[in-house]
Amino acid sequence: MTETSGTAAIPETDIQLYTSGTPNGQKINIALEELGIKYTVHNIKISKNVQKEEWYLRINPNGRIPAIVDKTPKADGKSQEKRVFEGGAIMLYLAQKYDPNHKISYPFDTDKYWEMVEWIVWLQSGIGPMQGQANHFYRYAPEKIQYGIDRYRNETYRLYQVLEDRLAQQATDNRTAANTSASHAGPVSLESKEGPGTRGPWIVGDRCTMADIACFSWINWAVWAGVDDRRFKYLAEWVDTINERPAVKRGLDIPEPFEMKEKMQTKEGEEEYAKMHSQWVMKGQDEDAKKHE
Image (tube, helix red, strand yellow):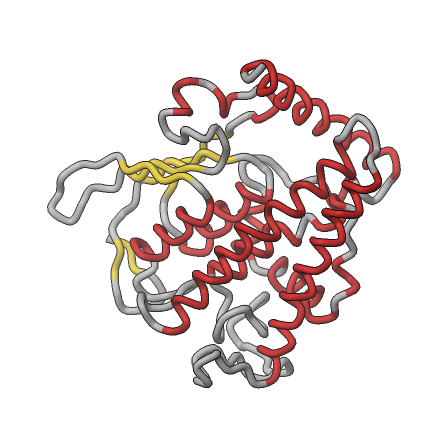
């Protein structure tokens, strides 16, 4: 058994992670690193359409990353191969199974737990799809359609403002709709003594949770969608704080080094990175279109 930072123990895990260096993949990489549990990485080469191969579709029938297969023996010693796909589902699974001391979550069925779930679902149904479309029209579309660029970039900005308002509220005195102080995060000036990247405010409560990790994974890619996260005071500080966390730094470099921000420092690097990614994005789109002609 391996001990976490609290009092409860978790088993020696055997988790197979199928991921790639995208926002959706990075949030699970980071969550696993934050939990400090054992896992094996499988680099799904999206550029080669590995995610559409038959063996992988048995793990994730949607043909996307991330996914996990949990081979950790059950409490009674029986073996298992539990697949979980979709990022939000994986995060909730990991929280319930392997975060008994609530390092990055809250106890099930508490106010804070359900608020965490709300913000994870908000990310999955809002920022993820909208910023993903902003990426496509701004970076990958073979013809520049200004309406598409503006439509999805403006919606991404709207969603960023929602999170900015939440963080601003958390920095002062947030209260739930039921007028309880379950999610109070304390003043923004409060400095943690626990190390880098532990200074609030956070989306829910007094710690970085799965909700923060999920939202961060996309907002950390803002510039790639032509979105300026520096417009938002609390949001920008929150992104910078999360980037300081050691587990986040490790997770961003799985399964390969995270190079987007470095490439964006020069025009040549930006063009090279865009060309490399647009090739596999458009190739995959064309192959999907042929299947449904």
